[in-house]
Image (cartoon, rainbow, N blue to C red; front, side):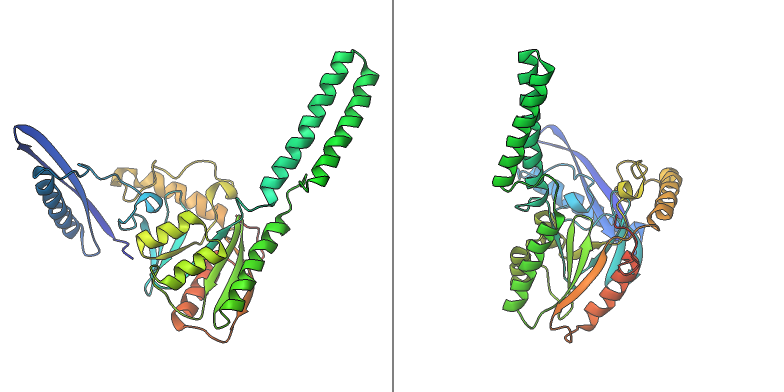
Length: 330
């Protein structure tokens, strides 16, 4: 896991085989801006020399935050450090916990077999029935016929939704029960594991307490697949060599409709634009105080088995997310 304090960009423009070639590369450091620039210049020279020999490389790296920075260090503002864990502000302004070896698993409910998908299908069936009834009434040019058709066809629509087990209203308890069932099966197969479960606005968060892991470990891959980890989250854990958990509310869920300023919210920003960012962050933090990022549910497995690193991260996580506050999730 690399979350640098300082960033810089190197640039080389020279002629190669009669053509002008410009190459740019980023550099980073925890020591100083000068060290970051030295690293950027080194990377730029190396890339330029390889391009000059005919190797197909991009000439300019894109300035990307966590989600798009495959294999690059995490390019986010460092808010605080706690041991080996680092709290950063992500591209849309929320605070995130990054840890090299304490495993978090995000399990999102989107795409589950029931819930929102089934609800949408059920509403589609019933909506189509109502439209067909109105069309029949209009064709007959009779209000009575229209009402009668509406009742008959709507009844058929409800009957079909029921027989095909398509929920008219999303039942989030179904998808929650499905996720919990997977966790129970996993614990049955791994009785020595200790997992803490949290409810998030979009699903569940799982925190492993019994041991520490590298994101590339086979045990991590197995847990991600078995528990249904969000695929983007799993990929970024491997690419960034760290685990991650959002600590504060998503801005739009906390009533902040404006994007993090300046746009895009990739760190660092120029000094003349820092005041706009700081103003936005102050407004966001005031709004986020009214919400929790997750809610603690329970612990499962061998709850007596606790790794000290995991305990330190858990205490930091629970405090920053307000997991025991009872506040609404956002």
